[in-house]
Image 1 (cartoon, helix red, strand yellow):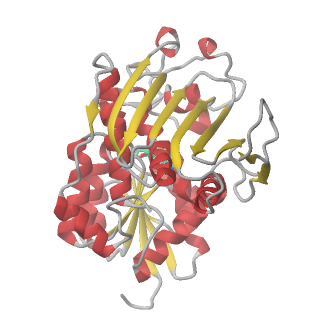
Image 2 (cartoon, rainbow, N blue to C red):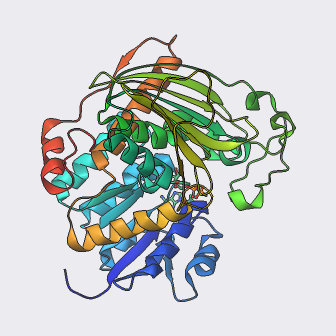
Length: 396
Ligand SMILES: NC(=O)c1ccc[n+]([C@@H]2O[C@H](COP(=O)([O-])OP(=O)(O)OC[C@H]3O[C@@H](n4cnc5c(N)ncnc54)[C@H](O)[C@@H]3O)[C@@H](O)[C@H]2O)c1
């Protein structure tokens, strides 16, 4: 690749498209074109990226524009078609999580990267969040001994606005919110534990939003047009998506390849919005309170009765409001990876294992909580990513 600035495109100029602006932080890369069939998307592209941005309604025309890389921020059910096309056109891809909504689509994307040799990077930005990296460091320093259990409670306080007013509410578009939202945390659980899930069982329900009668097709609008903390309580929500058939509460149990037992609980009608991880090892326990700047991680490593403060307390720094700073680090890692290759902290194989767990968990919860085994990644694909990116046969 020449020393000239990387030419980067962006496909899907919706809510998440703002991450395309982060390309501008890098002197060796330039966002040159955006693609989206939505009528209002050209104007949004100019607002986000400036008047000079080229625009097309058909992402397939990007194959002829000499792009080095593309950021893909289309809805989940379009990930596979768009990513496969770009990869097979020789364009490196930053693909938003979740990797895909079905096992076949997930494996199709990995296979396209393997067969084309084009670089694939999945935007699991939580791997760059301070709270996650600090928990990993605590584990790495041996402060809680050998990890045996990880429990994640996910309070999705913005759930009504984020997930029940557009395509996110439809099984046909996302499969389940265990992929759509949970893929982040399942991936973090795998990363903290150092192993992938092999067996999963789950329970869940649509408890609240299915009963709300106020419905509207919001495809003419984006999240910012309706988001407000005043939309409370959940039953008073208005303008929900016409179809709602995903669960708004789910509980998942996972057995990992190294024996770690994990759980993930996701609820979309809590008042507060954050994630709480508890990691229990053979010599202690770590837990976060708040998951961004100003929150803390506490470690208990002596015996106690109830003791809120912990034996050690670490202040979480870095990320303002969730994954603010993490997005910048994630984009920086992608640009460096496209330019120079080498190891990355995010991992396409890990992204596949996260959605595989979510997909199998959704199957389980819709089939009487019967256990599901996670299908393995094909050997040749695993070897390819082990050899060409970070070794990923186990999450490191
Ligand atoms: N990593 C994170 O923290 C994070 C946060 C938010 C969203 N996301 C992911 O980003 C993706 C986009 O989410 P969003 O909230 O921006 O959705 P959105 O609905 O706001 O925007 C999606 C855009 O993609 C466009 N689109 C659809 N099909 C297309 C196609 N074939 N070609 C080009 N454009 C197409 C739509 O017209 C729309 O403008 C999702 O996969 C979501 O999971 C990730």
